[in-house]
Image (tube, rainbow, N blue to C red; front, top):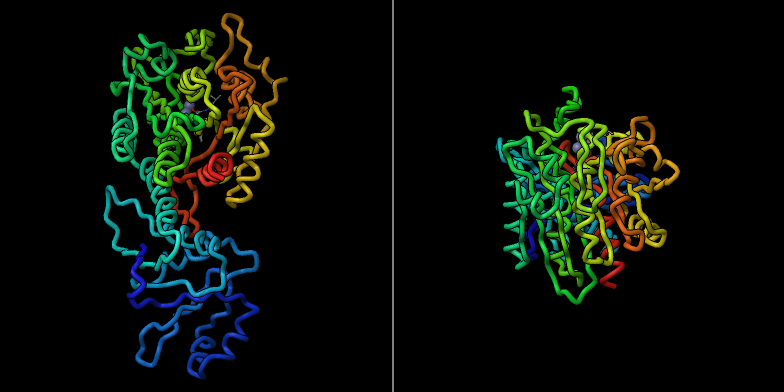
Length: 455
Ligand code: BES
Ligand code: ZN
Ligand code: ZN
């Protein structure tokens, strides 16, 4: 995927705008002009042309880019299609644009090979600068994708715990988990209720890292390892990809790995609420009233609105130590996908300054995330006749908002908090972004943390 030894011979990759092609060819020998013309290469985005030397070896690769091209994905199609070999980018792009392009190259080399070996071996790109940073971003995405792509049978709460433990060993972080009946003893009743029907015990996984004198950032991930919907069972077409319902947990693990690799000056407190939303004679039911860690009671309107239940106990716990910032990631609602589609994470926040900071970071990182309103006039939709609140609104409109309003009940208004509701899955193939598990919002949030704490 990458090489860092610049003494190795590499083939130049040369970007070319359609409008630049003529000028470029003017400077080339006749044979090259002729070759490029006969290849029908017009420098459209996505097109490339392998140009041989007189021995018939590839001497250079011309590739088309569009005006306003997204540098991050500019090399991705090449990484997917070029013959095996060593390449380097030859361009007048800025360092940052080159770094983005290298990340996109790395992301395009990703393949999920746990269950079937691919016969494609990725070509390699010479990395000369920011080697650690580029590799760290690619590794974070790889971790998120691998975790989400792994089938539920092999990615249950105990498996998430193994991953978190391994990560804490690598970075000398503290690891802790509370599982099964202990969740009741230690007052995490909702995580327990959602996961109690499964033979794979639910758990709250925690990883802490860094210097305690640094600002504390809590990350919380929804780790529903499989979401059958519970007794409000999902129809098969909606259940098909619910192995991805631990996508929030995968995001906080990927982000934690990135933060620790690049050594951000924060004190990191990661929580993963892990549970298998299964069915058995012991499953929690519609109409049950659960106690939450906060003391509020919640009447179950729908057992398929389980994500907010596992998250609310973790949000309460995270708030107990007054962090500077709480961010949660969750594949929380289908409604967020109706609102902004599958490729844009929706976010909510209780703090206008944080909202502006996220929007700025999103623009800088060139990753779109989109705010939806925490519209408190909808809060009455969660009113229950017999408990403090319902877990879902019986009227279906604004489902992403009512889910965020549910979570908002468990966060002190003085604590800055952002909630990301994302898909964690690519429904289609695009260069560098294969179908399957995907990190979404991770780049914007990492940029936010760097802006806030490391600059
Ligand atoms: N995990 C789902 C949400 C989801 C579904 C995210 C598909 C992305 C794609 C979540 O637990 C869920 O089932 N939510 C319900 C809530 C409803 C019962 C209030 C939903 O969105 O339909
Ligand atoms: Zn659900
Ligand atoms: Zn779910």
